[in-house]
Image (cartoon, rainbow, N blue to C red; front, side, top):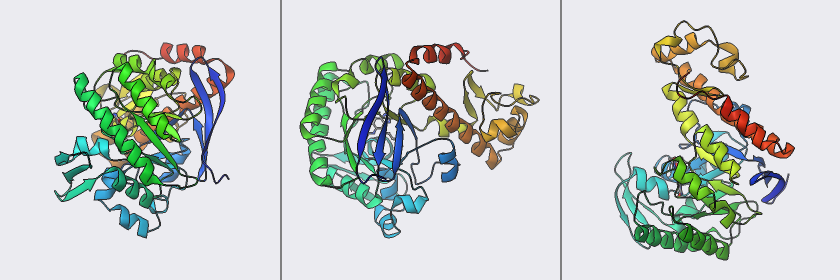
Length: 373
Ligand SMILES: CNc1nc2c(CC[C@H]3O[C@@H](OC)[C@H](O)[C@@H]3O)c3nc(N)[nH]c(=O)c3cc2[nH]1
């Protein structure tokens, strides 16, 4: 097992790439989808179940864990991996996004952000330095810079000033991260939907130097067409030999379109959050299992799926346990969705290796009916 962090590209097909990120805690096959484990748990899943879906890495959040149970307590208990019983790699987000979307009474200055906890109203502070300290206490393998992600739509001046602040915070994140062999620090590109500002951001990040580069500031309401418009150029603005991470994405077709445009890593709450609300993603489209038309259906969600939900249960049963609000409902559908998302990633990795990505993508879209199935 390596003691270093490194990224190796194995094959490309068009702009799509497949490779591997080596870390002291294990290898991450790319393109990779990261299940979100916000509060030290991928909701409704045991860690061994998350691993069984094919996930090589999961995501934690600075904002949530600093509020509860606090990073200091997790550190005293041996770090986040031990605390949540996951010994593979963990990437932690830096908290900036969540502070702007969750916390109350925020005050943002050059120094950082003070805010009130959405849990108990207590006052807290985040800055590049404090975010790096928290992520070090957690012991995460991939650390994200502390940034500001502006809500869209926003005028160009707002995007520009926010991006400039994030670049100053990226330098402070780099300085505070220090030298941590085997741990990586990723920069986050900002710049909204402005190609020149994204170029400026990419140049600023490369001048600082990071182990990986995230495309930030997307999946914030701009819509798929605008997001793809940015992804048509943004990955090429970033170093070819480092992992490219698209934050907060997405639906299956978003994920395929992002990999097609050169993205290596993604995270999204969609498969787990939707699983808990009864929305199943399948190769033929979305199944809203609470719909009455499933109540007598003896078929599995997806005949071709090998996950425990599809191997052991009918749509009728899944409909029943959701209607009855039984705990197994969210467990089974979350497992299915995470399994299906990992199947998409594995399919793309194989197709890129074989040089058949275009055919794989055509098949992916051909199988999907529009709307509910
Ligand atoms: C959903 N769209 C989206 N999420 C985003 C996140 C949070 C992801 C994290 O926040 C939570 O999802 C809302 C999950 O825990 C996830 O790991 C971002 N985080 C940072 N630091 N900078 C960004 O520019 C950014 C952009 C995003 N767009």
